Amino acid sequence: MSGDMRGLPNCAYADEPEDIHAALVWLARELDRRTQVAKRSTDIEGVVHANVGAPLMVVAEELNLAVPRLRALWADIRHRDDMVKSPAI
Image (cartoon, rainbow, N blue to C red; front, side, top):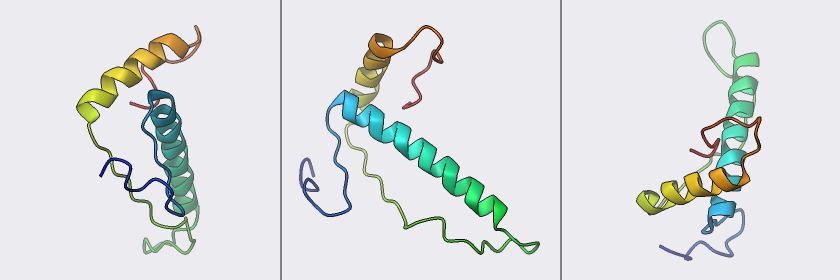
């Protein structure tokens, strides 16, 4: 699949550690936002009345190679007061 998605509308393709890191940090924030919207708009029966956003599909290939690269990147870019573990992992 490598590169097959590149250039498709509404598709982000990340293949460099910096881009993967940014994409995963964005995804975590977006999932947190959607969770908060859903919590605030759920009725007593558990029905969500808000539109939290379009469905997301994430394809993650070669994580056995990506995770060590993300760790190395975080070690390089992490500030002293940042969390020890990368927010992308």
